[in-house]
Image 1: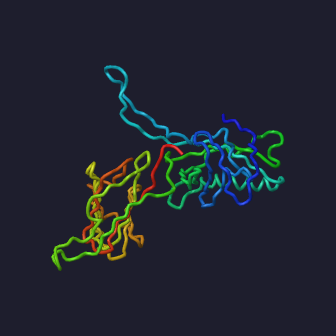
Image 2: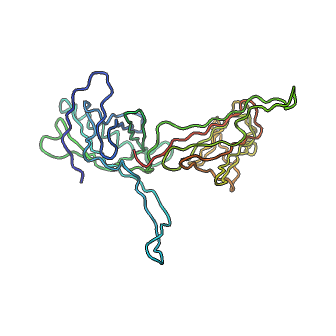
Image 3: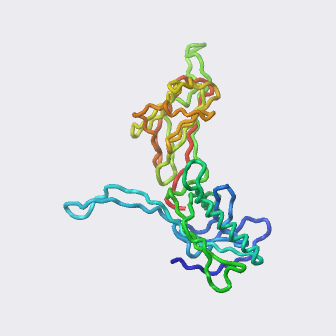
Length: 327
């Protein structure tokens, strides 16, 4: 059972400065913010605020937990057959206070409601609306993870608590156990102006779209990117050269017709989804069942972009957020 300690007293913060980070077990010094499903931001490490995280008792921010499936080996020992990442559970102690009883009560209700709001159905059909826990480092980098309230918004039930201050130990569930970089990585390739090969002399037009390139994933685990294609184009093929996995989207096969100049289509790999810039569902244009909407592993991966019907202005934008085992 996590133990709650008294709040740490720090020197008064100069007006207008960013709240100082506090040392959180497993991750060190950081500024942490909770973002509720409505988008409202709740600072969790401002020691001059009316609520903040109690450093002692925090857990679940470290390495992802994995379940190993293994078989006994005839010559002794075992052989790991499968590795499965498990949902993450975060224990999050929070202290809430107020200048008087009514101010404390308002803060207690508001902060608790911000976490409990994650249990409401989401607009995307999910039974929950996850909030986000965001950890920002002193160097400006930040990682975040989606959280859903499980239990714990209850006071200490001790003498003097519940009047102008109280604390709770929250349990938060993370469906996806990986931390995600708040800054997306992107790769842009665009076709240059097309020219006649023989006029006025043999020449080659610039085209970064057609051909091979490399994509670098700085994270710890695979990412599932989104691809946005800007016309003109009739068909799009993306190939991961190290595995041979590939997929093709034939826009004309959907009844939409070729992508005209400035028109876009976005292909999401997780979940599989294809939408035009106007929201039209074009997933039927994928070359099922051969299509493999592949992921990008950590490190450098060779890929090939191929656009049929490309012309000046045709472009491909690949976007993804690196994912990490720890905060």
